[in-house]
Length: 127
Image 1 (spheres, rainbow, N blue to C red):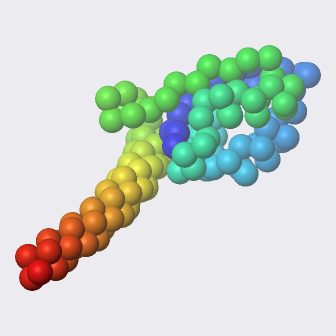
Image 2: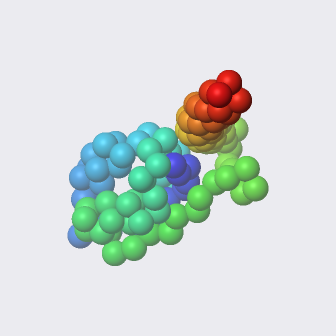
């Protein structure tokens, strides 16, 4: 999961911006605003390395990625901040759901084990 601002020399003649956009669209959501590219993905496997690879494969030499988090909140114009904050909240909710599902599964397994243990204890006491 990532929400970020990506900066590079977008006017590089050796690079293919349309190819880059297609690659990024497959990975997540894109916003072009104020001469910058903003990107967000709910997919856990999409990282800054994945984004850098998409840039390299589109002909860009390098890019700078500024990741946004709760601690590093966006400081852009109002519309861009709204888009970024919406995506940050969505990504946080997805992570919260993922963690909760894993926790519930773990609790369920522990309860089954406890139930078996209690049944064995009851059977042993009945003997």
